[in-house]
Length: 261
Image (tube, rainbow, N blue to C red; front, side):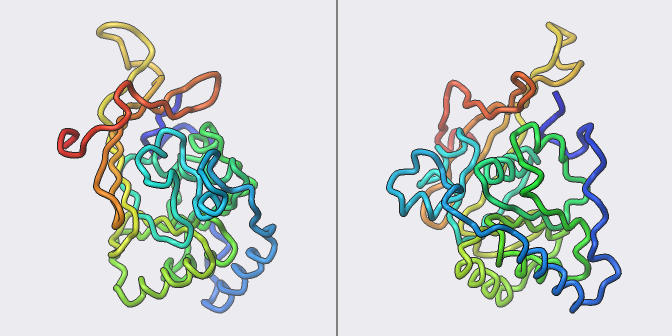
């Protein structure tokens, strides 16, 4: 099994060089708008199974099954900003859940994204757009892509987004009913924050040799907190099964935050 908690997994060639490289600002924006125009209209396919009333399901983006226990309505709210940090498995799982359910997603930055790990989780590459080199203003690129995508992942590259600009992007996400996931930087006022930490591995072999071969699973501690709910933590396995990587809850699915920390 490839190690889903890392980006440096054995994989096919990394996402291609960005077609935005070398373009002027106006040319970049025109290119992105053409790409968005070619994306099929977002429909009702993207909802979480069993999310409850239809109107609630339509306001949520799906997440890997066991993660739903951490979120009050079982998914990521449309029209919101979500901060994701820690083990890369979490980000890959979100991309897989949305695209497998029929949604479209874009990834800005993250030139070394583990494409193979995402597909093993169920990601549909035909519904994924990659912009590994967004140029000097990745936030602007994200704002444009919110027009046509269900989920936009924005790698901030360590920058901090000023509150005034963050508010403008949040307003755009809300008006387009798209969800923005930010990583690798500071974005104040995110509605939900998710953090995943590795707390163990299982691999081929027994005893002293266990885990020295190909990894069979990675054990994660995932913490969620938001403006509308108290922090909570779940321990999950990201496990290889029949050629697919699955999210499996551990025996104790939900742990009080004070205990987990």
